[in-house]
Image (tube, rainbow, N blue to C red):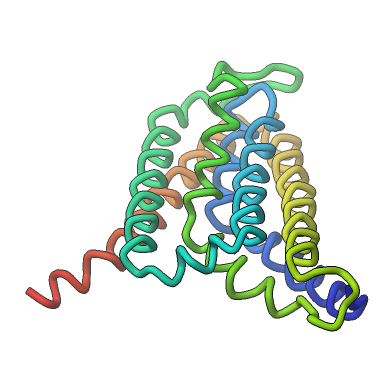
Amino acid sequence: MNPELFLAFVVVAAALACTPGVDWAYTIAAGLRQRSFVPAVAGLCGGYVLHTVLLVAGLAAVLTGMPGVLEWITLAGAAYLMWLGASTLRSWRAASFTAGAGSEGASGLRAFLQGMGTSGINPKGLLFYVALVPQFVSSEAPLPVPVQSGLLGMTFVLLAGLVYTAVALLSRTLLQTRPGTARAVTLASGLIMVALGAALLGDQLMPLFSAA
């Protein structure tokens, strides 16, 4: 693999992982509502592992090349984000805790699956892998293209895991002695997820209303 291309990918991937969005909102909410944020972060990373597998297998390009399938994935992702945001809004008052104590929240398995759904069903994640990763793959490198794609995909998974862990730790450290602020941040996280889900849904439904 070309070292310069790899370093360039690391810079771009790190910048994307550090950009606040749905993953950040879910990570912060999990850090404030659950005893351990590890399952939630692992789930988010698991979703990107799924995207990596699809990319290496060549299925990601096939899915994005089928508008009907991509639209259904987008609708499913929008509905899921709105449901997850609504769930966060229903439990935002539980984000009040003190140092060393954890609030009653979803089980580790449920947090993992929710995190995996957040990143795995997100069509923007799929498009990121299809549109960006191939730009950093070199046909002249000694490694086969699928292997390069897999390494780049897993590099993003690692970077995302580190960033999301830092976000969860910082949110918990800074807010664990500020219950009022913790509740406000959790409320904002839920609203962000609902708003982004509604925006995705609107993007898909708007052409239908325009055609009518």
